[in-house]
Image 1: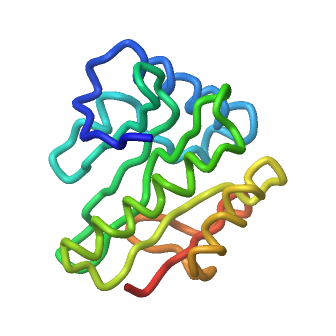
Image 2 (image 1 turned 45 degrees about the horizontal axis):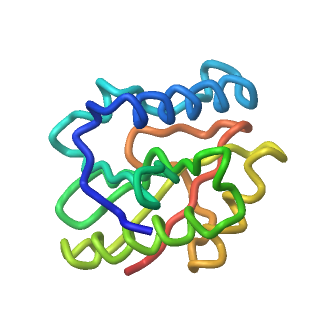
Length: 151
């Protein structure tokens, strides 16, 4: 699997981001969806990567700089055809390594509290992420959980 910096202009990545947003809409009420669309992902404080096996898109992930010492994991998604193949694990490891390279002291994330998000929460916990209070502009929400990793 090759992880590449992505400019979000390809049709494959547009489709995966749409799938991601639709998945969020199926499992979360609108006011609790914090997933970003293509335009929002193209902001300067966000770095976005896609994962590929040859010419096949397998997944994606992003890192948002909250400040010089704190980053946020965003837009983690595995393509449906590549679920349970370790794509998310490799992408998360890549994002963590990039956060360390940047000198961040902490990496945080928001994900859903519902059963559909349990695999994601387990993945994050397996990397040492701990549950925490809301960070940045997030507020308490029964449909969200917040996790952080001290780097």
